[in-house]
Length: 85
Image (cartoon, rainbow, N blue to C red):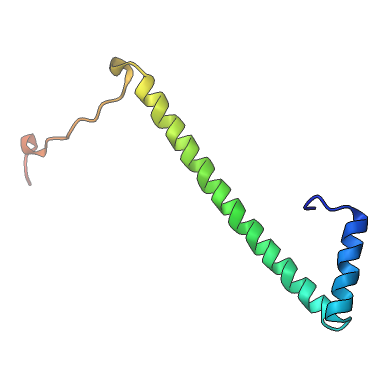
C-alpha cells in the first residue's frame, strides 16, 4: 500500500495516535478510509470511460482501414414512392 513497509506504517500510526489522541483516531481513520474508497471509485470510473473511448477509437480506425467496397453504406429510405394512406 503506497510502497510503505510495516515499520513505516507503525510509526505513522503511533505519531497519529500521539497527535490526535485515542478518542479521535478511529473517527479520523474512518473518514480517511471513506475518502480513499471514493477516490478509488472515481478512478475506476475514469478508467472505464477511457477504455470505452479506446475501444470506440479502435473500431473507427478499423472501419477506416477496410476497403470501400467492403463497408456498409447508408442509403436514405425514400418514402415519396410509397402510397399514402
